[in-house]
Each structure stands twice: as structure tokens, then as C-alpha cells.
Length: 211
Image (cartoon, rainbow, N blue to C red; front, side):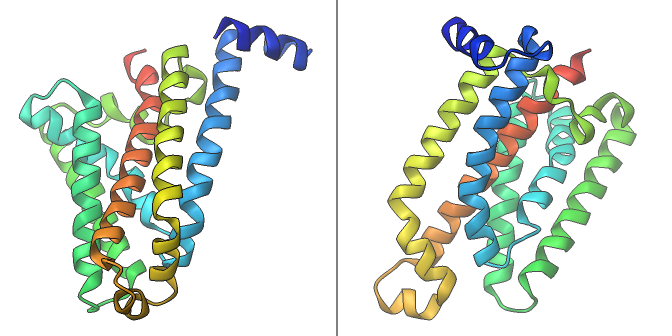
């Protein structure tokens, strides 16, 4: 990381670049942008424009459940609830009873309301409000490295399943007729988005929570 910081000092001769927390914020943005860019295109193709937003708002509920269950690791709570919510959204929208955006909106509102209710009852909302607001300037060196690893993992999975996901987004019936396991790949994509959103959501906010 020291070598990267030295390179940034040469590349960015600005006063703000003299501070490590500003470099961390810049590097975090450079990691998060392609991470969400890769998944965002397929989210739009599948008419799931509110999907990542719903998962981001579910962070409060993940934290609330962690508080209730006395789980100290926030990342485990966020990812577990995010993955569960993503799979439930997939299950409901596959039934075709409502549009995808409607299903996601209902889950998003319900999850946020449940999180606020649980936190209000047990420890208070204000203590955990940083998870909804956050501060990217609080990202540390270690978190930048972990974001890079997340980018590599998501990029690898994306390269492996992109063609199948694209075919599914065009026509689910056509994809099934070509031997593509539609439900499986939709769940893989949803879990990948859930993990990416939950992880980056926590890493961008958790330092602010402890200040």
C-alpha cells in the first residue's frame, strides 16, 4: 500500500492527496465503481433497479437482528440477512404475482421498518444511524484491500456466468430451453449482488459507527 500511496502522491499533486484518509477514500471509490458497474448493468436488464437499494436499506435490519441475537460480527449479520432477503425476493418475483419493482419495494419498506422497530425496542436507532448515512472518508487501508479482493471475486464470477445471465435477462423461457438452470443462476447473481452491497455498505460505514 505504501507504494500505491507514493504513486498517488506523484500522480495527484494536490493538497487533499497528502492525507491518507483521502487516498483511502479515492481507492475505495475506484474499487466500488467497477464492482457495482458490473452488476448494475444486469440489474437494469432484469428490471431490478431497486434491488441494490433495497439491500442497502436492509442493513439496518441486519444490524438489528444481530443486536437481538447478540452477534458481535456486523458483517456476518449484514451478509446473512442480505442473502436471505435476495433469495426471498427472487422466490416471490418468480411467482409472477406482481412486477419485480413492486416486490422489491415491499421487501425494502418492510425490512427497513422491521429494523427500526427492533432497534427502537432494544438499543435505540441513533446509535446505528451511521449505517444509513455513513462516511467514505472513514475507510481504512485494510478495507481498501478487502474491497479489491471483493472486486476480483465478483469479476471472476461475472466472467463465468455473464452469458447465461444475459440470456436469462433477454428471455427466461428461451434460456431454460437452451439448458440454462434459470433459478440457479438468478440466485447466484442475487447472492453476488447481496454480498457486494452488504460488504461495501458495512465497510463504508462501520468506522463512523464507532466514532
